[in-house]
Amino acid sequence: MLEKLNIVKQRFDEISDLIIQPDIISDQKRYVELTKEYKDLKKLMDERENYIRVTNRIEEAEEIIADGSDPEMSEMAKMQLDEAKSELPALDDKIRMMLIPKDPEDSKNAVVEVRAGTGGDEASIFAGDIYRMLTKFCESKGWNCSTVDFSEGTSGGFKEIQFEVSGDDVYGTLKYEAGVHRVQRVPQTETQGRVHTSAATVMVFPEAEEFDVEIDPKDVRIDYFCSSGPGGQSVNTTYSAVRLTHEPTGLVAQCQDQKSQHKNKEKAFKVLRSRLYDLELAKKQEEDAAKRGSMVTSGDRSAKIRTYNYAQGRVTDHRINLTIYDLQNIIDGDIQRIIDELRLVENTEKLKETGEMF
Image (tube, rainbow, N blue to C red; front, side, top):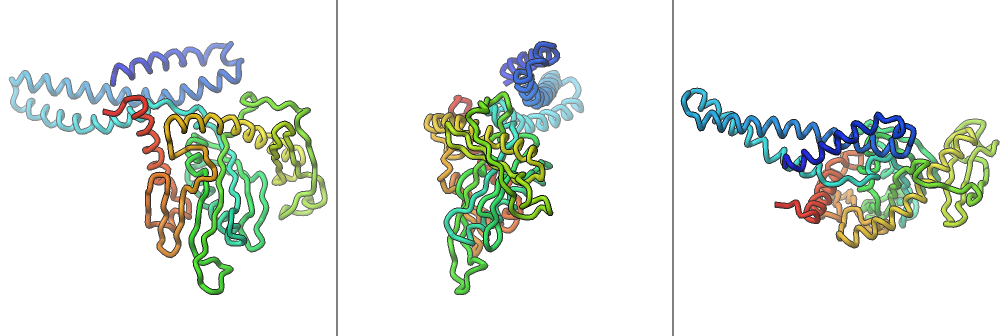
């Protein structure tokens, strides 16, 4: 293990030297890539220090026990040896997981879209529930959420809503929420007390930097229109909302959240850039998933990933057959434990792939 960590340390030392070079600092794309890599490797270097400390304690204790000249010291050394040896397996597992190559997209911010699926008004209400679940989860992580565009449902909730999330490792966490979420419950609109099944689709795109995707302005048609919904006197009277159409692909992005046309245009371009970037990424994910047979992030957005059964208070994640009887807390944003399980399964798959499983 230490040999592998020493190889990583060589790369860490190399990056530490590179990020202070003037020519690297002036190359924005290269500088951002290297600082992200530095941040990831720094965590691994901290664990390397822990690993060296624990193995040194084991060696010291074994030397004292082998010497055997002082019975009292030998007894203390045995206790130290047992303690250090008990720490080692967990540390070993942690480092092994950290050594798995990270997806370079994971550290990016994200654009999230929640759309009501089949089920009429109830589907819009459920899409609103999923939106609240995700935003509460983001708030608990200390991330910042900002609405881009939305269309409200007739009986509450949203037909669709799009929002940006910024913070640490946002995309690497939220990508596990992409797919079809299904609900089984008695709708507020149901008079007979019958259980209905509705669905909402969640899409998560990594937010593309300007240097990730170049958009030719000639390829984009820009339309301005009046905003709808709450927002005071300036809404519905000025053409502040912006819709962008990327003509080569037919992709559309719009924003009506801000009162300023300029700010809406800026946000809409950010979403369009992320969608174009996601198109390329989806192709790559499909190829990777075909190679690996991964269920966790296959990139298939039509896949049913999770069911929320209100009568039983049950949430089932179908990708890993995980069932938790704690629906209320989960719908209130407590989804980290589900994401941790999904990440563990995916990392174990990657470990098998690299032949690192013992």
